[in-house]
Image 1 (cartoon, rainbow, N blue to C red):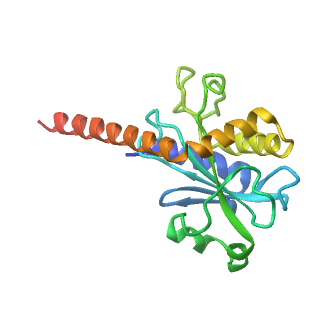
Image 2 (spheres, rainbow, N blue to C red; image 1 turned 120 degrees about the horizontal axis):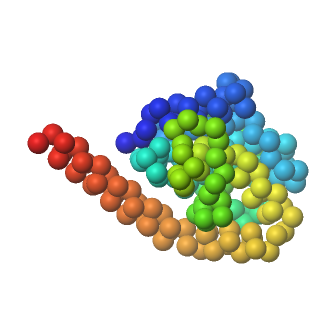
Length: 193
């Protein structure tokens, strides 16, 4: 279950910042087209896909995020997902030539306590929250890409570790989501009786 008022507020803020036509509410998340990316990745803009998990708006952060970059460029230690591992209907939002020249790269975010406290003006959020909103992800991605491009050893080590632990991190995430779903279903069931 996703808190729809929170998600709609985030979509509204994204549309104001990146123009309405560049923001697509996909069934599995949010697509941000023509997002500025640092020089050195083959183009000045890219597309970002933020997978919105169950529990978003209720304290669950976005974890899976994917950026579309040129295939010809060095992979910059990012995990190449290709088109085949993305939601099947995602491709319909992009031209055929993008499928030939671009690919999706996974960037995993495990936000530390230092990252908390970066908040948008979303009215659903309080200062005590540790949520990082969808509106903040494009900026975080830009910072990560710039650090990767510049060869920041700390960032490269973190990205390398996340890629090595990708399966383990995804299994942890699925287990957390299963616990959340069970908790939400239990609350619904106990409310009904």
